[in-house]
Length: 268
Image 1 (tube, rainbow, N blue to C red):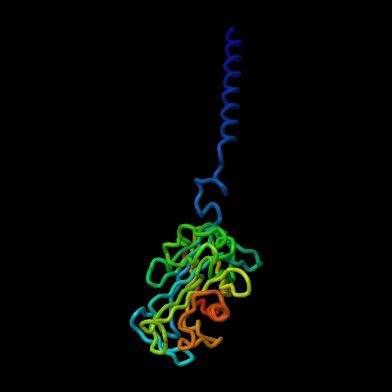
Image 2 (image 1 turned 135 degrees about the horizontal axis):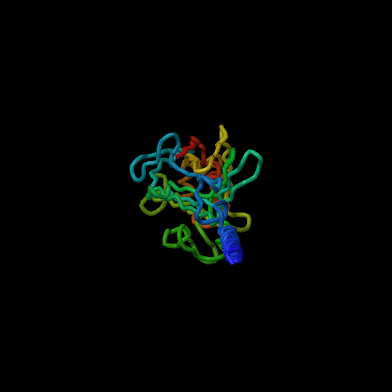
């Protein structure tokens, strides 16, 4: 009798152990794709962007400092905005991490807009970054959006003409505009006069991104580049607010306004 009872108990014990084992296999294990993981286990980091606006060799001072263009027009800046979109961070082997929903509006008058970061960047050695100045055709054809693309930001023309890719406003004694103002609103997303430009910045030293670390790219944006090498005279062109030959020349100019000044990596 005792032998039968012992046998029954052993059978129940075996079943219990088997059930417990099956449950453990069904539980999600820590690793990529699970919400409970962090950067140290998923092999990802972050890349931050810090934009500093200049006019030539001087940091941009809104409404105060006077600058001079290559055409010898003096001017004061009152507004300087530009879109940064479609960010690609490029590894040494040529593969890229592409930021999803990649649309950022840098506004000089809004300090917080000049600093942002992209998350979930895979670890590895990175050697370059590329992005668009402006908003791609897909979002232009979708009409007004939200967030950085919200029309409330003053960077949207109409449903037909789309977004203003970059904006430079100010005053100049050489301007024939009202109150000596000049206004450069550069847009257009299709055809020969598009205002979108691609920028690629190569790192002088590789950025080695480890799990949980953050790389920071310090980027200089020089508003003086809007006026050359294609000569843009405020006296002759004090108002550019449509996609045309002049706006196209300005867009070709501002494609060269970005310079990478520093690459840093911080590890927590």
